Length: 216
Image (cartoon, rainbow, N blue to C red; front, side):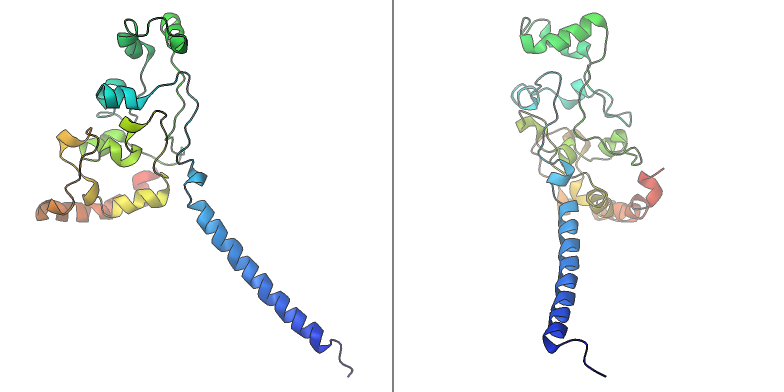
C-alpha cells in the first residue's frame, strides 16, 4: 500500500498533538491560578458607599469600638450595619453642615435605612454566624483585616471555601481571649494554648469541616 503521509507530515502531526496537550494543561493551570487569585475574589477593591466612611478615622484615630456600629455582632448571625440614628449621635454635633453627610441626614429625617454596600457578603448558600465566631474567640481582624488602617474598606481575604476550611481544620492559631476579640494588632497566643483546650478544638474540627456546618 502506498504511504499516505510523508515523514514530515507524521512529525508535524505528533508535534500538533504535543502542543495541544500542553495547551490544555496550561489552560487548566491558568484557570486554577485565576480561581484562587485575590483579584478574582475582589480582594483589595473597595465598594462604592453612600458616604465616604473611613474606618481608619473612626476605628483607628478615634478608637470607636466595632460594636458601636456593628451592634449585633455578639448575638446574631449578621453583624449589623450602622443606622442613620447611630451616625447622627455624633454627626448632629460634628461636621454638621458637611455635604458628604447629606445622605445620612436625609436618611435620618425620612426614616429610611442607609443603603451600605457589603464588602464581605458571602453567597446565599453559605451560612455564616458572626456571634458564634466572635464568642468563641475569633477576632474581627482575622477575617476583615486591619480596618483601623483603611481609609476605604476592602477585603483582605478571599473568603473562599478553601480559606474558611483552612481555619476550620485548625482554628487554634486564630483564637484569642474574649477581651481581645475586638482589639486590632493583637498577637494570637498560637502555641501557648493549654493542651486540654487544644485537644478540644482538635476534636471540634471534625464537626467544623462537616458540609452541613456551612451549607444548610
